Length: 465
Image (cartoon, rainbow, N blue to C red; front, top):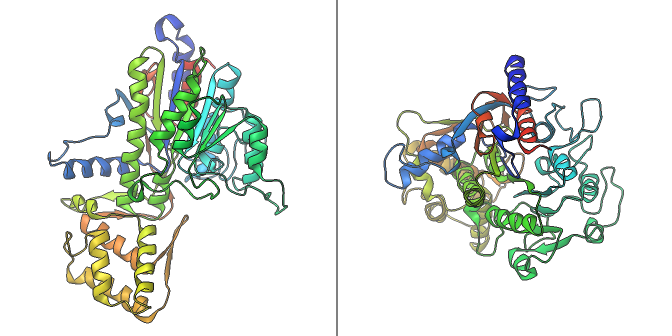
């Protein structure tokens, strides 16, 4: 690895402006938790539901001319967390799990976003999860614990970056030690940021604001932007955030920009081993990348788009023999929303929901029995869950890192995964390789195995920060 990295840096050093050009506009997309097998599962799914046969459909970003795979270990673990991996992707330096923008010795690290700002570029950071969550925060935050959300929000203000987008903020008025402090929103506005509360609010502003933070309409709650599978008409999307980022960063700008955009809920779906939900998130991520690609086509000699992931989540296994992955199309909501739907149904039945009531709901929301065959073994799994919970008015939950679901919802998801012939190795992160794809200026440096710390170093050289 050291030999490969040394050779890469030598090539980059020898690269001249005349030969290699310069990336004036940089898009850095991070699919949180998006391992190689998750991308493969998504393309198998697309091929199956579009009717073209095996290998007939692909995501836009997998067609980019440069592609390889990336190692993700942190300074103190073979399996990284998002803070350490985000720091590696933002600074080119390994750190310990839980650390954000600092070395294992607690020394602050300069991020590629900060270097871009110093170089006169406009800078944007956005995600589908809270703006002060680990991955977006790694590009502007410098804290010893990723859970120091209020302190991270103060780092955001100090950064002076031009655009932020995401699902509000964790711990808006309380510090890490529990001390009550002023709400961060007025402090953000005092720093000159316009808070756009929903895409319609942003469009109504007409791009007048030089510094913008785009939040959902329900901006006062720190929950993530809804999963693509659960989306309603007025929900903010990563595609819209990408459009707003480009418009904001291009305003009165002759020097270019750097923008990091994270598909944060791929990871959340994978923590719950919810295959249909995670796959829909990757498709949604691809749609945001398509916005950047349209920009690239207008500025092909000045733009670099890089797509990678901070780590794999779940260790998904694609197939036991021939897949039945098309059955996932009949899942109409995440297991989180299915949990709510089951609770509402039981409540509507005054706590006396029958097995037939449950089967009807699972048919409507998951396709089970209605579109998806359920053998006697799987029906027993579901019936046992019903008998031990709903039939007894007893609550048994299934927990993952980001949600707590009913046992009934969790078992329905597991049965659908099983029928589709998908399996998961863990409900946490794995040490598996993640991908990197690139198109544009400097794409030639993403064609061999690299470490996550190499990516920002390459971008920095190509963009000359």
